[in-house]
Length: 322
Image (cartoon, rainbow, N blue to C red):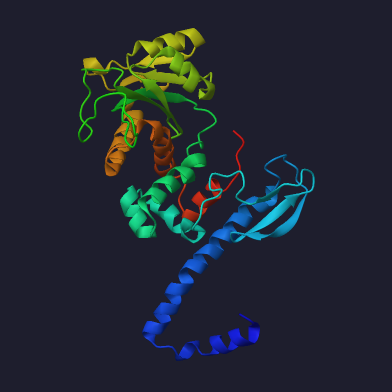
């Protein structure tokens, strides 16, 4: 619309009645959301914008496409935009992304999220794991001081799979074997007294020392005091790497014991297990292949790492080399 025509249209806005004003606002709301998302993407990427193909920082503007400014690399000649190389690349309906970010902060299941934002349930599910792709990688560099470690188990799930390698279960079902078996997913959680948390899906069945070396050792401070239950895997792991280690005999009814470093217990990590499992109930079961995403999602909420839709959008639209 040209400027003179827009001025005449704008001058007539006060003459609109109530229903007409609401109609205009409803029509402008998606466009306002799109403008906000585009501005947020440009602010996030502008300081470190470079070619996703060759890493060259020299580029020039090269038109618009899909509401975003495109750029051409001066070295390799390829074109890109500010979403290239991010988990949100090639996704549509940008005007609804901020509303969907708020849905993630509210921990809504797929169908309720789709109804609130106004998209198909398959779109809501696909967006969930695209938005969480970088969020789940936000982990503390190291755990210090007294570090509690314990594992918890969830029944393995092939929810959403077209083919199963076992007979189907109804409504989740139960494991076919008693105790800890290969039918359960093992989730390791380590947490220090400052609230820094590290979690990992170690695999199926009982926890092994090799899994602790892979998932816990790189982030465990050498001077830390590791506190665990009486699982032999922790003892073998601590002995091999010469890590200070204290055990709590939970089977004997011991919950807390006193040591030189203070109270020795695993109640913080067990409370985290309880909060995580209670939070998962709202999703009516999650597939085993997506467990790491849900662990990262819960840590972002529990630790207060992500508190606003704008912050979640900045994380999702950033480029992280991992």
